[in-house]
Image 1 (cartoon, rainbow, N blue to C red):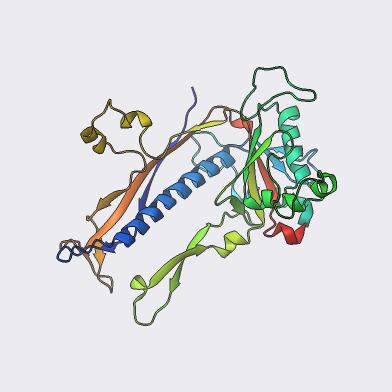
Image 2: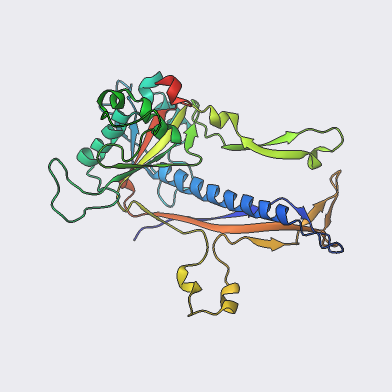
Amino acid sequence: GNSSRVKRHNFESPLFNFLPSFRDFRTKQLKFAADDLSRQIAIGYDMFIRDSVFQNSQNVFVVNNASATDVRPLIRAPFGMPSTTSEAKPAAWRAETGAKVGSTDGGFLTYKQILATADYARRYLGLMPYEGSSGAAPADNSIFQGKYLLIGGGEIYNALPFDAHILNTKPLAMNLLNDGFKGSIGPNIVFKEEFYDLRFDEDGAFPAPEIEEVLTDTGYSTPNATRQTVLNPAYANATYGVAFLIGASAYEVIDVGPPPAEFTGASISGARFNKLSWNGEVRMTDNVLVNYGSGNLDTNKYGEYLQLIADTTLGIIGNTPRNVIAIIYRRQIAPSLSL
C-alpha cells in the first residue's frame, strides 16, 4: 500500500478582552477573530497540499524551455517519498529550473502553452483526465470525454482575453470587451484559481504570501504596537509561478472541516454531537498568558482575556502522483499591459 506523512498545525487568534463584571463579550471582535481563524486554516491547508504536490511531482513543464540540453519542455524532476524529510526540489533546483523558462512574455503560460501541456499529458505521459472516461465511444479526434483540471494564479485566466491566438481566432459573437473569457480552455481543460498560488524568486526562495506590518506609535512599546497583515511585496513581485495540470485520481487528502453529514441525522443525539471534536474545529479558551508590557507575563487569573484556537491534522497520500504535471512559468502581474 501507499505511505504518507501526517502533519499537525495549530492556529490561534489574537487575545481579546472579556470583562466578566460588564459582560463585555465584544460580539464583533469575536466574529472577526472566528472568521480570521477560519481563513488561516483554509490558507494553511491549501499551502500544505500545494507544496506536497509540487515536491512529489515527477514531471515538470517548463514554459518555452530555453535550455540547450533539454529535448522538450517537459522534464523529469526529482520527487519526494513519504519518508523523505528534506525538500526534493530545493531552492537551488528551483533557481536552475526557473532560469530555463523563456524570457519576458515568451515564458508566460499562454493559451498555446496550456494546450501544449495537455498534449504532453495525454500523448507523452498517458494521463487520464480528471473526470475520467465516460465509458461512451469518444467523438472524432477525442480520446476521453473527461477534462483536465488546471490550478494556478488568477493571472493565467485573466490573460486569456488578451492572448494573441484567442484574439485572432475567436468567434465574432465572443464579447471579450464586456464579458471576458468564459468556459473551458480548449476542448478539455477546466481552470480553478488559487487564492495564494505557489511562487518563487530567481534564487529559488518561496516568499511568504503575507507579512505582519507593525504600525509604530511612540506611545506604545513594540509588543503592544498596532499590527496589520498585508500582502508580502516579495510575494507580489515573485518572478516565477507554479500551476498544476491534474489528471484522474492523483491524490487523496485528510479533510479539514465539520463532521460528515451522517452525524447531523436522527441517528445521533444533540448531546453526543456537541461532544464531537472535528478536524479544524474552532474552540474558545481562557488558558492564556497575558503580556502586561516590558516582558512581564502572567497567567490569565482574572479571566479578562479569551482566545480562539484550532488544531488541524493534515495529510495527503498519492494514488497516482504522476497524474499531476507541475508547470513553471514567468509571471505577469498585469497581463493586460504585458501581452
